[in-house]
Image (cartoon, rainbow, N blue to C red; front, side, top):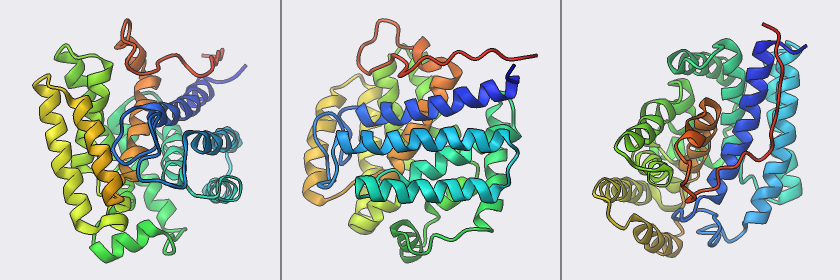
Length: 295
């Protein structure tokens, strides 16, 4: 019989994948691939992103196996690098590179902080990230070049601080909007608004420099205000997407953390609980995963 820890980890792996699909299908998202268009990514489409996530499904399964077997961190790093290469080879772009890193980090950290204590999990993420960055280098990536050029922490600082954009920004924004009698639709975009204001998005910096990042911040504040005032934020986002496409602006870091937020809220059950009768965003689990644990 599988252990309780194994079952919890297995469910988290499945919810991480679900979160990535939910982020992909959320529409509209300025500058990002969604069900309406490919945003500022002329080389991408929903089908290509789905192909990438199929590869990531196998990665998360292998990560689970590696963690169950008690393998070393080096083995998990190797799995992540192999997955990046597989996505590049099969899809032609590293469209989920940040998510591969963040999902593997969160899944591994969950083994160090069993249960759903978010403070403990954040601490485990920070501890694990410190070990990971001591063993790896990504000096050839666009993100690392942007971090160096613009003197920002980006995804590296986010991980070393225990994912504050997830635990201190996105999740509280979702919960506050639900408590204010919003629905999952408005609560989801409340998360997007907070992440646009707080994430040091190196894809935005790489594409448009500090002007691009400042634009994300400003638009995130406006989106948050429109949601709070129950104004037409959907039209705002649709119009914003056209502007971002003209600027070639996108926000990959925001998207990765939004996927993590979807995943964690799925894992805690809050996502489905909040959406009974709300059809704004797809809520059906992608695949049921029963697991019987020994206590």
